[in-house]
Length: 138
Image (cartoon, rainbow, N blue to C red; front, side, top):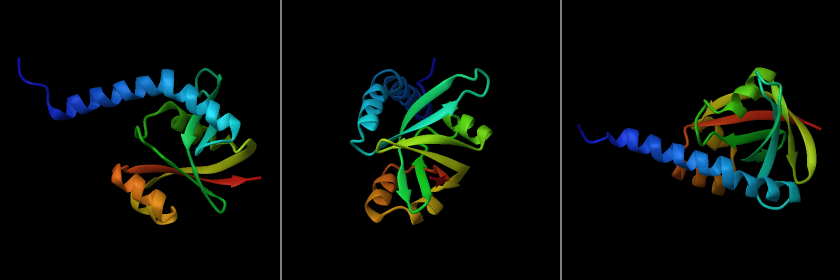
């Protein structure tokens, strides 16, 4: 039997991080987001099949009426699929509830050009390829 490819090891590593985040880290970031502290927001979305309400913490950047969210795990995450299917979502940012509309997945060049320089450098360093861009309405 051969040695696992670097790609499959990377995928296993990312899956492990995703599992840890889902069961441990997300609970901490939700608490931070609910308190209005830290860089986190909460995406409130409804399951496409289940109809169940979900709350997912994300690191969102607000520029004017635009919201940019890095897609650290790619485009196949359920919260993104739910938002795209529903044409938007509710978000909680600094204890305020807002409506986000017109979701679209954009490439890193488009997203990084909109972000403040410091945040753009951080996301560029992680080589994130895709971002969610939405508009918010009060």
